[in-house]
Image (cartoon, rainbow, N blue to C red):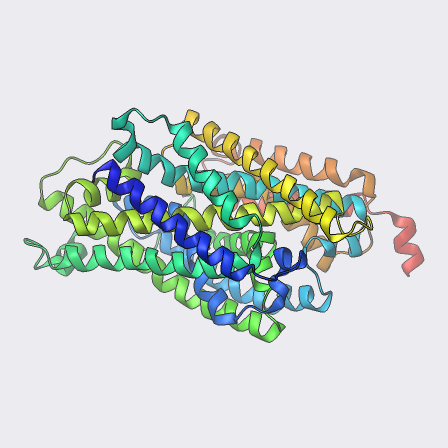
Length: 485
């Protein structure tokens, strides 16, 4: 694909998003940036969340990982689906009952200001790392396969894309994101289905279903309990990954909380869980078909498995499919960035700065919020360049490894709030969270040696959350407990 055509697609797509942002933000007050005025339709939110949840990591990394990991990723996805039902049944009613805009307001009511800001800070760190990693995945593909040959540096590609995202999210906020995510999900699914239909109908793929069965790539279950992909660990870890990366994540929850009623939000979450399960199965099917097609064409495997889908779509498939791939790839990029940027701006303004508690008028609130938005975009840019310098291999594993460390303290804080008694000594809460994350990181990196050959995988999140919970329990203010009794 020519760089000129690619740039035309990117800018055309951006102009479309800018038009949606202008339309959805007309006449909206400052509060609409954070909550969408609670007027979102549940089915629109459910469909748009597909693009946010999948992102470029699923679009690129999951198909490429099928040859090595087969369909084992489905074990984790089943856990995801269960987790969404738990979020719908437990957390959404809590957030609506408390009429929260920022979900970390729960920690302020339950524990106090220090815990509230500690939880918000861990979210900001978690979402910052996760979102910029997802953005890097897509930007790197666009850069390597099209723009690098022109001598365009990666930093310039990243800077231009970030500028685009800032321009269409600066005013509309959640109200805009709900609709842009819906459009982006539509394009991403079109690329997914288009690739599958083309491959199964291409020359030499007449017996594709039999060939896939014989290849062993469709194997799902792993019953080796010492393996980091053991099925029980994967399913349980998937449940808790969803609970923390959706139920305790401001970006994901702010869209759900923009629905008018808790019943509508729950319906959105449950319908979305079923759709997401089906879509992930299709991505795994695509990965198996891509590897099968590459073998049938006699192509050498790419150095990084994440490059398989881009290589096939842009170098070996018809131009129309390459075009659809690029549109789908761009659609995977923007939901990873726009919602995260909006959520991080909202959390910083509401939770850390306390923009609503300072008595500022709407003009000053808007000025501060826009300044934070721009500064957050600069931080995004720095993190993207850091990932570019590291050049990680399999991104999907890196993403969940980061989540296990950064979301663990949030899991422990909310779990203790819901199921623990009393309040921990507020001054110690930040230190407890940091200590739990550091200990967990050490255990994960040395688990084979320390645990007799056992490999810690995604259950690292549970260990991290459990250590945080125990630390909070150990330092409960006993005077408050006795007074409550």
